[in-house]
Length: 87
Image 1: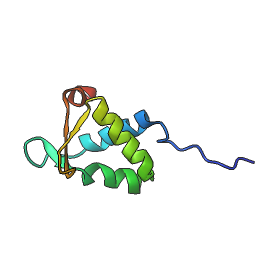
Image 2 (image 1 turned 120 degrees about the vertical axis):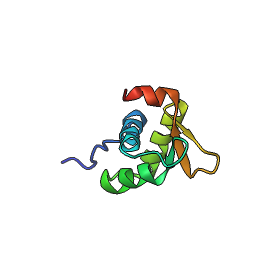
Image 3 (image 1 turned 90 degrees about the vertical axis):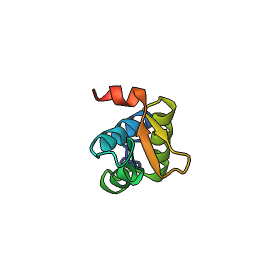
Image 4 (image 1 turned 60 degrees about the vertical axis):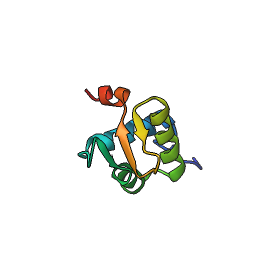
């Protein structure tokens, strides 16, 4: 009997890649920025990721330069590496 279920986004890189897929599905709002809700809503509610997995994935994407976060935390923008990721 297995007591724990493997989480698909337990690996921060997998979570970050899924967040990037969500980000690429949305059109930028202004100056290449899009609302953070465009990626956290689908990740948390559709993919059923946990808040911890979301934060780990977002931090991973920012550290790798895939995304850059606005100082307000309301917007994110693709970094150079993020633009090339799905090119």
